Amino acid sequence: WIRSDLVRLSEACKQFTYITDADYPDEPVTPTPPTTTRFPRPATAPISNGYSSTRHPGIDLATAMGTPIAASAQGTIIRAIRCTACTDAKPNRFPCGPTTYNDEKWGFGYGNFVIVRHDYAVLPAPVREAMDDANLTGGFAYVLYAHFQELRVDLGDIVQAGTLLGLTGNHGCSTGPHIHIEIRIGNVEIVDGQWLAQKSINPNLFYVL
Image (tube, rainbow, N blue to C red; front, top):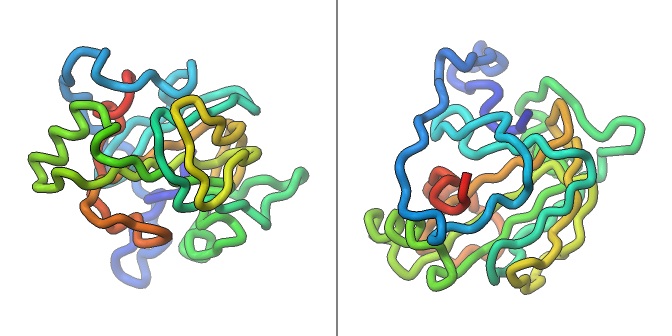
């Protein structure tokens, strides 16, 4: 369902070796504080792929095509990449390899995607606690939403809770309509790029899942 870590890159001769769920099972959902401290799930859809910090650093929600996805809180759009290689006839490709993951025309495998930067003050208590534990108090959370059919925001936009980010799709390295969500935390105010260097956290700290 997603772009990242569908292959493990180790030695050069193994760069296209696929891993299995048995190799890196989903991490168990850890208990979190009462649901009122977290944001609602961004779409009423089942989780089709869970979080694993090693294999799948996010979640997939199996939405219908064209489901609207809105921002959960005030933030800034630090990336808004449109998949110029995606067409109506061929919006996706699978399987994918390093060539796709390094190609901006394919949205680095994410297709059409956005990243929202949220300030510490607007984050749910469980995320702030995770940041405090990692000595990142006062930092930022970066939320990526990927595989959109259509984006409704642009780089630099300031969004509020409820601002429409886009409509879900099946674009990039994808096998069906869904929204892929990753969340990372850090104390560097990233403007554009270097997002993957930040610490990955389980989205169940951010959303009621």
